Length: 280
Ligand code: SF4
Image (cartoon, rainbow, N blue to C red; front, side):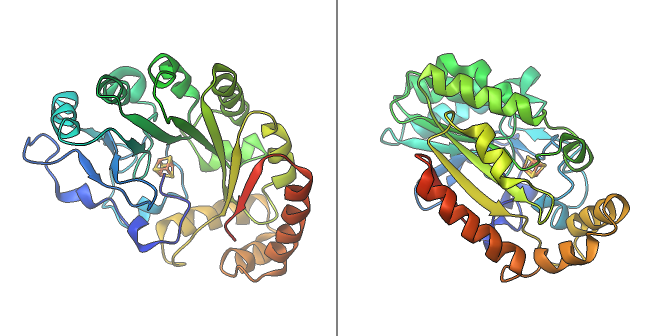
């Protein structure tokens, strides 16, 4: 989901002006990641309500409260899929495919059924343990992988900054369940908040449950953005002594905080059997 990159393509959901109810609107879009040809985001908007979300700076309100979905998604998706060779489809770029509304609306589950019926696979990224509900559809897929994103070692801080997400321990348990079921798993430690995210503790909690871990710092484009204003407010109120250093590190990846983490992660990677991909 769109919190973890400084790529320009994360600046906004291009479907903003689309009529999701129109059959003329393709549901399968070219993928923003080079490894995949196509991506599907079953929802526009996201009820996970992360106060640092990239979308808060580019959407005109409503992103968190007016989640929109496609009309006749499975039919339209099946139609597009039938014109392609079987391949993995990425789900979770612009919004979370397992955000709260999915528990009732099941657009992600219906899309997975389409992929399975057509011999395709999915690569999923979510913050939710709801994904384990769909193990029955994921398991038979030939190249399936599921990633779960988590960035808070302190769950009380998560409650402040990710208002609608499941707790960390539920996400770790979900990764364990997926892994034990035989599904390829990865974790995104994201967003790393300087001085606040306990990276070694998170890595420890994931050990044995993931094939790889990606590390991404908090990515803020500009101080005037709503996402920075949200975070800055919380940090100032809760950690006033840390605030100045926190801000300096957020806007400078050469800050000594990141240098120290790089050294620590190099050491950790040498001693671990988990692939570690450090993006700072
Ligand atoms: S999970 Fe959070 S960061 Fe990702 S799209 Fe939803 S609200 Fe934004």
